[in-house]
Amino acid sequence: MPEDLLLELETAPPPAGSLENIEDLVRVVRRELGWVVKGIQGSAVTFEKAWRRIVMEVARGQTTEMHAARPRLLSAFEKRLSRLRETHALAAWLHKPGEADVPSPDVLLPEIAGMERLKAGVLDRWQTADDLEELAARDYPLTTADLDRLGPHRRPAASYYADESRPNGIGMERSNLRGRRN
Image (cartoon, rainbow, N blue to C red; front, side, top):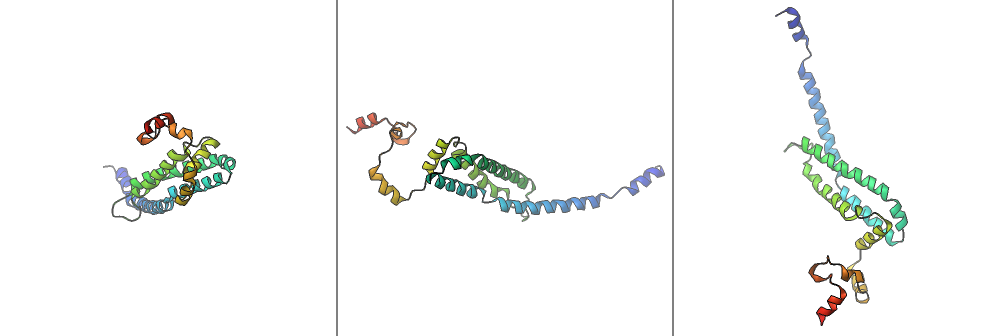
C-alpha cells in the first residue's frame, strides 16, 4: 500500500468521538421530550374547560363576542392538536420500554382522542353564531333540581317530535304519536 493511503487512514478523525456526541444529543432530546409529554398532558381538559366557559358566556348573552373569538380558538386548538400528534409520533420513535426518560407515547392517546371528540362534537359543528347558541344550549349545565323544576311546565319543541333520528320511535310525528295512544 502506498504510504499516502496509510497516512490518510491513520489521520482520519475517529468515529468514536462523533458517536459519543450523538449519544449525548439523543439523551438530551429524550429527556426534553419527556418534559414536553408531561407538559402537554391535560390539553383535552383545558380545551373542555374553555368550551364550558364559552357556554356560560353565551348563557350570559355574549354570543356575538364568543363567536368573534372563534378563529383564535380554532387556531389555538389546531396548534395544540397538531403538537399532540407530533409529540406522540416522536415519543413512539424514541421510547424504549424500561427507560424513564421518555414516557410511553400511549399516555398521549387519551389526550388526542379527547381533543378529536371536542373537535367533532363542537368545533366542526360551530360555524355560525346560531350554531354556537344551539351547541351552548345543548351543553348548558342544568342540575337535576333545575330539570325537575322546569320539566313539568315545559313541553319539547315540535321539531323534537319530528326528528326521525331519535331512538325507540320517539322521533315520530306528533300525529303518529297521538294515533298510537288511542
